[in-house]
Image (cartoon, rainbow, N blue to C red; front, side, top):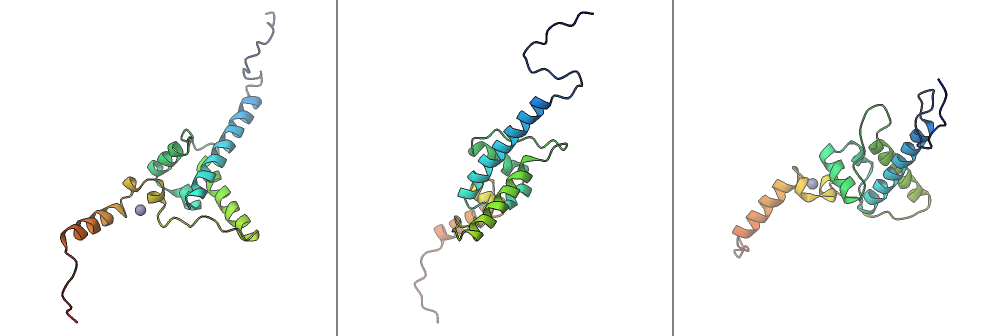
Length: 141
Ligand SMILES: [Zn+2]
């Protein structure tokens, strides 16, 4: 039962806990969260993104150039961190009297208007009405 030298592959320690890997994963998650938060911030997307629809979050992550963060329950989900960072940034802006980008009226539309089931039908309807109704000419009042 001779112990071979440990290969330098970052394999789990004999205790079964891979601290280095965990720490790296943590750093990667934090980097992702920061990237996502700054992408959202630039578009006026607030902490509400943390509880947005999963599809919206995934599209946002792809658009931000971040592979969508995993939401596997055990660890604190990256979107919670993103929301937290956005909250912190809003407070920082207040304290430093910085004017943040104008808040997006609709998070989904700010991410991708095509995804929005709330505004999209309304927009299509308004476009349709605008196409069919001529400019009002009569002065009925
Ligand atoms: Zn919308």
